[in-house]
Image (tube, rainbow over all chains, first blue to last red; front, top):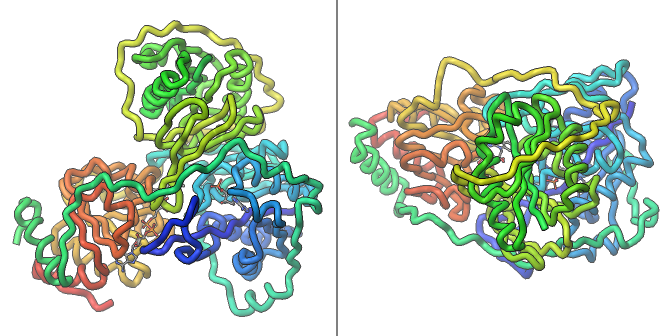
Length: 264
Length: 322
Ligand SMILES: Cc1cc2nc3c(=O)[nH]c(=O)nc-3n(C[C@H](O)[C@H](O)[C@H](O)COP(=O)(O)OP(=O)(O)OC[C@H]3O[C@@H](n4cnc5c(N)ncnc54)[C@H](O)[C@@H]3O)c2cc1C
Ligand SMILES: Nc1ncnc2c1ncn2[C@@H]1O[C@H](COP(=O)(O)O)[C@@H](O)[C@H]1O
């Protein structure tokens, strides 16, 4: 059995940041493995540990910098990695869901996995859409926002729980092959061990261009165009107490006593 | 021309986002100079019609297929409705179920998709606004296409008022049962327990800013000193540091205390969904740009590990050694 995990390197914005053109200035960004994908990797690795003959392959669409993140997934137990990138992708204004889904689908068609695990959302873009778009494109079944997974490889069924709003879970059987978008909390992602980090250096990491995937530059064309980025006007007129921690704590304490919600 | 919105229901009830979609849909239909159609798929469609007949809706299409949401039935039905109505815009909810079918529908119809939209403007092209980077910035997009799919963030638009004059039509679909690859087995409620945070008058709520499980006693000591109840954002529960019944937010509990003190919580939309109805919101966060400050009434922009011990001492509590 083969599990393909989509992993994204996400950008986190510093407390103080600048906007440069249509994006946040590079100097205000730090990069990390997407939180949701961390859980997806862990779910795949745990499955490979509890079933026989499971290969875990990760796929990332991203620049060379993303290899740090990919190595993290390899250090946690994925077997090999594929990174998709080239100049056409580098030069695109941004990659919309459809484009990313096409790229990931092209890799999935090569790999022919039984299961694709992706994150519910990317922490930075938060489209919440790529996994399900890939499923449709691949002709796989799918389930979004999965917080529990039991695989019956023989029956080719994934029994999942989908986490709905308000503490309600939907119990659903999904026919394989399928794409599942993984929700945080489904497992406890491990930390990479030193041994894992060493081993990751030797695991295969293949880089594919559009041409390698049999796609042309038209894949990045999108009718959706980013026109502006800005810091939202704060709607609040929050009173911010200033001073030393003792002073601000004093202000808050006085407020709570005034409100009568706290005695003493 | 038409704008087509799809209602959402669960276990017999229409969800609020359905009525918000009517408002957003009417707004867009006015920009486009078009009609607004609303489709309701599955469940007690006849009963739902009455509630969905809100101001601004021109036509309601009822599709009597299945009881509960099944993404295969939704996708097939919407594809057929789309072929029939040829709408400019397809408006879907950015709910958990919306996440489960909107991208598939857009892909299947080969239409551009923008998710989690918080504002719409103009028609040629339509400009949509969404958030990025955890709500720290907003971005606008022009959609240069005649047809497109948008998912609309819940609780951004007001619900449409009752008293519409919509025409009701039954829409007959042709569902390929063999193509349905998922089966919904049932539902389960989670997060019960001894503490009901929805009853609390004062909530001391902790987020990822607490850093380590070993630091939780600091917040427990504050809750004790204030005689308040302890709650949290999702990562604290995901990490197993507090039980699920303490989680505030979209997938946790909706709370409306007199005072909600958000400590080391950024204010992600899914968290805010659970606490924005609090009477007074106090935020303690080192990041002055954290979205929580958009809804806070009072704030302290400082390190919680400095402020919380001082606050515990104000109320004569014992600061734990952490
Ligand atoms: C489908 C779905 C459902 C979800 N449901 C929920 C839900 O029900 N509830 C929920 O909460 N989330 C939910 N989420 C997750 C949500 O998107 C966020 O990831 C989560 O709310 C972030 O939690 P946080 O604010 O504690 O962490 P972060 O976003 O990491 O914020 C931590 C904050 O702590 C501050 N901080 C750090 N150190 C300090 C310090 N020393 N002193 C003071 N401040 C400090 C930082 O500035 C930051 O603002 C859901 C997500 C999805 C996709
Ligand atoms: N550039 C990318 N490379 C690999 N996987 C991605 C990429 N972008 C998104 N994904 C996957 O799709 C999920 C949802 O992302 P999004 O739809 O952008 O919110 C992420 O959690 C990833 O698993």
